View 1: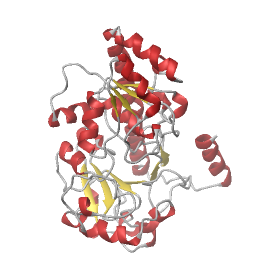
View 2: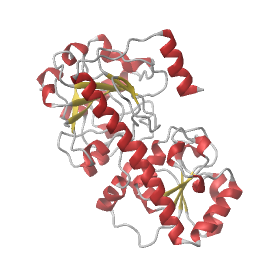
View 3: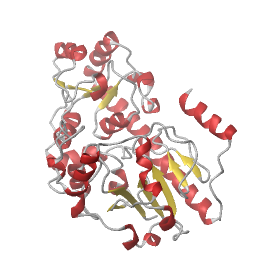
View 4: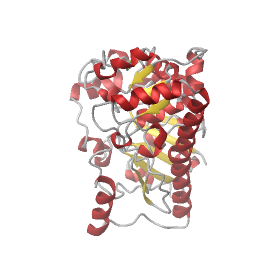
Length: 366
């Protein structure tokens, strides 16, 4: 299968680079997050930045994210590191390029050479998608909250960002995480920036342990220093942050809001054992019960136990990596293959119904 990932030139995240850029350089070019980098490390996908079109559906991002107009103008033409305004004031993007350096017109692309197109928000208008009936058209909204629970815009599949292990049998909704990466992808990429440490030490505090941005301290985890572990916190520099995660022995969340699970996937892929309460993450499937911790006392006992047993550490990390492979890569890709076969059989996404919407909302939020 040949896959394309597409974003608009006004999107406030992901890569600012050309098609064919190596995955490590793609990561280094990102505005904010690592995103679906596994499409390029595992499946040799193409990445495209397209000019924002005036069609109504290409404004779908406004339902959940309304950046100031000044930021939108800057996103189109300014080098990413020079953008000023909401959120960007504390980001530290590495890219010296602007979207304008790489963006192309949607009508200039032969979309028929792709089996699957994954659009972040609605980057390709409906009229273009309909010209390529042999291609599976998927959209993933940049903000997962507030999505309508049925497929829109003349596309075939709505990617939910959920980590569930569910496999879609046909067109409609399919669970596919925003951070789509393999169980060791980030460990390999981190090694291209710096040699791995001879011995992993330290505890990395998950960014949402605190609301402070940029993160300077996580007081509720300071006690780990008593175990001889350094406490590391989130860096706004994407490469520096990856090296902090990859160099740490443990990735811990204590306190703060419930998270979707992208940072958990990243930590496991970087080769770092995650310890947290599964109730604090929507992707709790990634955590075997032996890595559950529900407070300071659990963390103290768990770190003490694992520090004494290197074999146990490898076994638990191996189990977490197996779950990333199963729930983050294999199930979503099987869904896409099923959806592609469904479309090529001439099937269509189900029409929305009140009962179907209620079931979807109940499954996801209750």
